[in-house]
Length: 473
Image 1 (tube, rainbow, N blue to C red):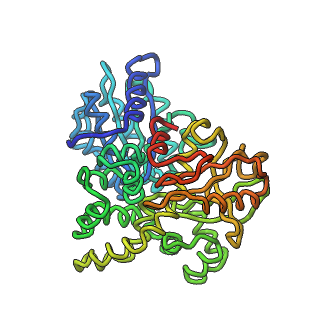
Image 2: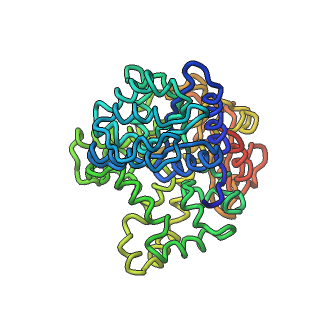
Image 3: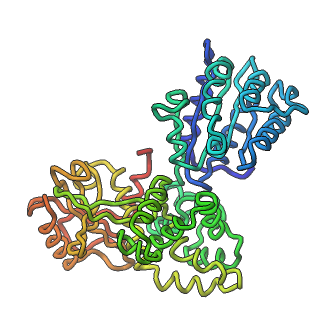
């Protein structure tokens, strides 16, 4: 197994759960639900945890087979595992999940902890409506009485969250853990890049470990892209298609809407028109699905006035890049013309990056303490009108979506060798005067890739922004 980088927080949480199992008691068994985007490294994290823990375990991955085939594969996995009673599954195929899970309880260790992993858990709960209740019943009556850490893993974020909600069979029985993408700071450390180049790499990779692992340390963005686009099996190319195929195996309309948003359309009307003049109810259904899966985010202007000017964006940085530049041109790359795709990226990069970096910077600012952002300690958003006059990059307020008090107004200038200057300051002051709830005394804040030539306004650059990712939010 290759070198494992990062994930210290998640490994500590997993170790803590195993320590609770070791502590014993009448009901030592614990359950943990792990969720995160596809290809974000959940399975790799769990494998690393198991290897470090050094206890008996079984790792089963559901695969959207028929219920009978899933049961057979589960029994085979247990039989091949190092659980003390694995031989009880030899040649046995349980007829139901209740029988399989009860038999599993006889195979785990009684002298020390065991780990049981069910990966792609939503495949089982989606295919068998009784599975969730069965798991809860057997866990309560049997498994929890044994020193077992039961880990359910899934990429369907909405379904994994729902498993532990009130009214569901497994409510309050499991601890929840989210496995995020690698942070910009982790990406920079992994690739040995300076702060500004780190954010470029993050916009391209989205912090997906598989993509970062194929990026040679110290290689520039354009050197990496030239190599990755020269062969159609690179993780940069295949990760997007595989993620979409798994998330939306049958929802072609939702994928069309997602592709439209990925191409740069942001408003409900233009998305519907560009996606094929979709009727409003159909577009609403697709957007609801995309938002429930956390693939698309809906942003609302932040000010003291209510607004209905919702704008949609692809939530994941990597998928945003893939939909903009790679997905529509995979056939060209297959023909060996990755150079043409690279040329398109280079010609559009500056304008695309200027828009794509905004949500990343807003999230980054939300992680920084108030003193690092001019004393403004509230929520971070942006403001716009239907005509984009004004369009304000940064608004910090006491609450959202409708604020009571605006704490700061800011601008993002993310251009190379073009610092924030007097003209930018004049535009920012004008925009502040057009923001509902702001006044001439509302503090200003600037985020600039290349510094500033203007004095008197707090300015954050790439290095200061990376400080926001030093610790969990």
